[in-house]
Image (cartoon, rainbow, N blue to C red; front, top):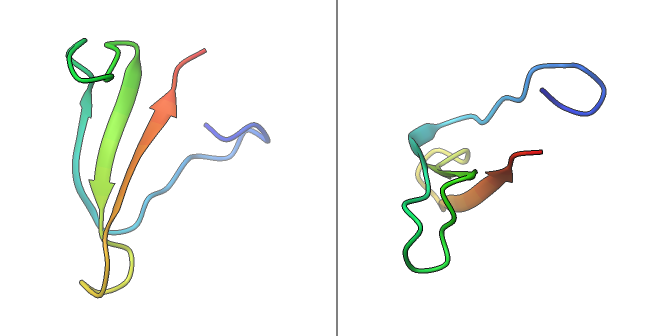
Length: 50
């Protein structure tokens, strides 16, 4: 959920997984890869859990 209570949406989602505690990817962070621009470019990001 976004801070305003609306659902979080990521267009073109390729993959999503929690970190594995290796290579600066803590297991309490959700990582994703997406391509929201019709395969022109990609996005790799994380969602921090609170």
